Image 1 (tube, rainbow, N blue to C red):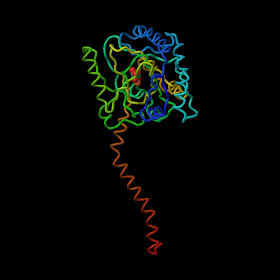
Image 2 (tube, rainbow, N blue to C red):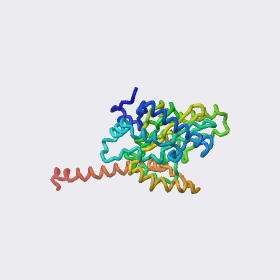
Image 3 (cartoon, rainbow, N blue to C red):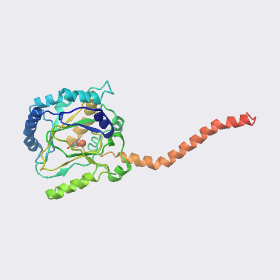
Image 4 (cartoon, rainbow, N blue to C red):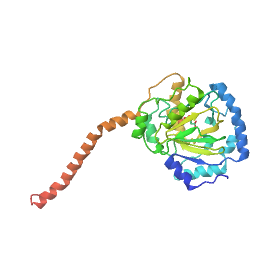
Length: 314
Ligand SMILES: O=C(O)CCC(=O)C(=O)O
Ligand SMILES: [Fe+2]
């Protein structure tokens, strides 16, 4: 059945941090997108090896017409406009990310997974995390899209985590930075697959996102999420972003310098927000006590003149 937008999509996007526009892509466009995406797979592997996760950008390599057609689908534009209508100044324009658009592929050689992460915070040491935290809840920032051209269950997420910092359980699971992830390079394919699955499931609250061919997923990359990949399930999922002017500004001034430094071999240390949380927790009894004293002081300031008046002393 063709996609129908509903209030549920708005609610899911805000509360769970992602929503899926089911069956968005009509069959003829799906065929055109698949044809181009499948041309990109060997290019990705030539450029980044047999286990290449993606081809990005695709614009220099593939015919962009079907991708442009997808961006311009009226039903998609209307759905996105409805999701963000509470922010009338926001520029919702998928084509702004056209030159960055990528395609995620299944590995050619062996199973593997990423580490659990929130984008920027856990992937790129050197990012200004205080700024990232300030921008965390802005609807103009950090919106990403996964558009499945084949059924795709690679992505897992912790729904709702985009609304908050890490819970005590998440901090216990991943206290340190960089976040560790399994080295499966010396395992058999089956052992690698199951090791990755155990790791993915070890995150409290993790849920698999199941996309079908033709589904369009809008999500916040500030969610805890992870990709876990096997060679025997064909994948071609278009990976894009909603690049508002504000997000482009972050890209240019906060992300790009960090990326350039990394490419130049400059390995910066990871900042660990858990250290701030731990310091705050340790200080909490003193903070609470100080608040208590302040309240008593305020109460005394209110009470004393009244008592004095009552006693005829003031
Ligand atoms: O494979 C995916 O869908 C997720 C990829 C991802 O999270 C990333 O590259 O940061
Ligand atoms: Fe990510």
